[in-house]
Amino acid sequence: RVAVIAGISVVGVVVTGVGIIIFTSNNLCSRTSVLYITHEKWSRRPLTHVYLDDGSSGIINASYVSYPELGATEREANDGVHLPMTTFKALTMALEDYKDMIAIVATTVTIIQFLSGIDICRKIIKQGSTGNISGFPFVGGVFSTTTWLTYSILLMDVSMSVTNAVGLLLQVCYVYIYVRYCVSLTSWIATRRQMLLFFTIICIIQSYVFFSGEAPELMKVRVGMMCCLGSIIFCASPLISLKDVFQTQSTEMLPFPLIFATFLVTGLWWLYGIVIQNSFVQYPNMICCAIAGFQLLLFIVYPNKKKGELMGEARVM
Image 1 (spheres, rainbow, N blue to C red):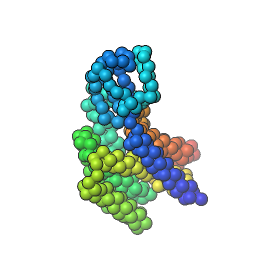
Image 2: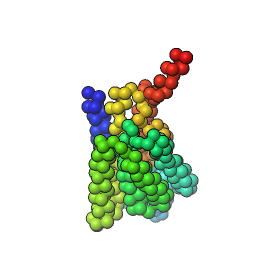
Image 3: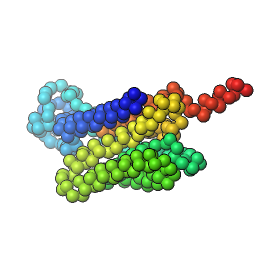
């Protein structure tokens, strides 16, 4: 029963995440409307700024502009016309001056999250085996960083490329350490299957990017969807040990540093996604933050077994 519940939880989280990603990506691909317009009146006076949320237009200065192609549904003769619109592009432009600072902070925090795997590997080396620790978080991390690295190269974003290149290098090292100290045949077979599955998907993505010949914008959207899926898989990967947590009533096998770092990072990116009104940033990180928060609650409900034993011995003494 516990295994069924754990399986349903993991599948439900992944399916929900994929559904949200597909829904939001379709909206982003199909929507072209006026973001905001700054002008004095709807008249022959100069139209100063027109911003579209698909980024297809910039600043327009003209004595007269035909508005239907901009998606405007109403024209009012008063100042300060308000149309149904989003604020994504406006906030993006407002934050343009802070782009470098945001990039540095995001890069630093994300790399710190990647470094949290060192504590898990240190524990594995100290005990001489992987024990009950699952290798799925590391394998999922390789998949996530590889897809995001591909996406960042398509965007020609240096900060994202450096971040995910460092993350990919660290995740590969973690996988190597895990495989080297994996003495359980069952764990080794499971990890090998996971590696084969993700390696196949990565090869398919790379083949699509290099040989499909599709339009760059469409390619970015589709690879971006895979990046969001990879992030959700990476954040949900510790749930693979959910069955053992319920059976042993101990969170000893859960990687607390990785989960805590994931909670902080995804929480920050979720808030940032709300500010910039970017669905690709907002919704996946919202899901990941909720997943990490649920796993942190398990540490309260089912504390580390060794800690519980130590407290019991202290009470006896």
